Amino acid sequence: MPKLNDAERDSFLAGENLIMNIATVDKDGAPLVTPIWFIHEEGRIWFTPRQHSEWLRHIRNDPRVALSIDEPVIPYRKVVVRGRASIDFEVGNDDAWRDRYRRIAQRYIPLNDANAYVDGTDDQPRALCSVTLAGAEVRSWRMPLGDESYDGIWAKRYWTKDAKVKQQAPQVFDKSV
Image (tube, rainbow, N blue to C red; front, side, top):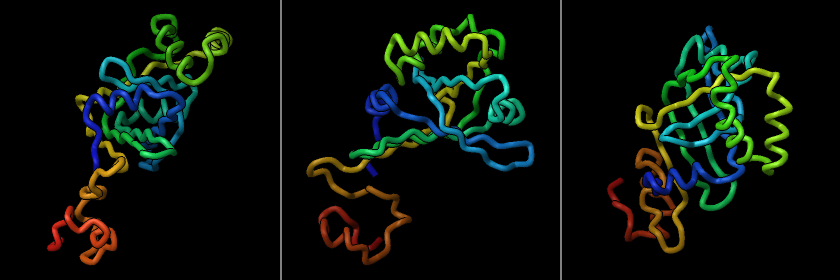
């Protein structure tokens, strides 16, 4: 599958209106997936759970998380991360990182509205968490563009021997797969 190089990945993660789904694990091992706002800065994915967030409680108990960020339009880029979340600032230290929270809000709503939102919710404490990409398993993908080969669009384990797409673009496939 066409993977994003680091520059393509970083450009994608800086895009507007991308929602991140974070998967956490509760104390019994059951998964929880929550769609949230985020920002990619300094090689990290940053996010801000509220003080009574169920998924913040999960991170405190088990920092293993999975993140999924994708777009619903061609070329259907996606970045999937498995790593460990760190709580960089605990609840109640919001003033130390409020500028980052403003930048997160500004990715999703217009500047004046974002500032009003942040200022209007500053009495609702949050934690600041992150996942460092360098220490995580990061996968990326996109559909081929233009005349790019479909070779590698899926991992080889997914292909059947007589896949139709192999017949459509025979020059790019190993017939023995």
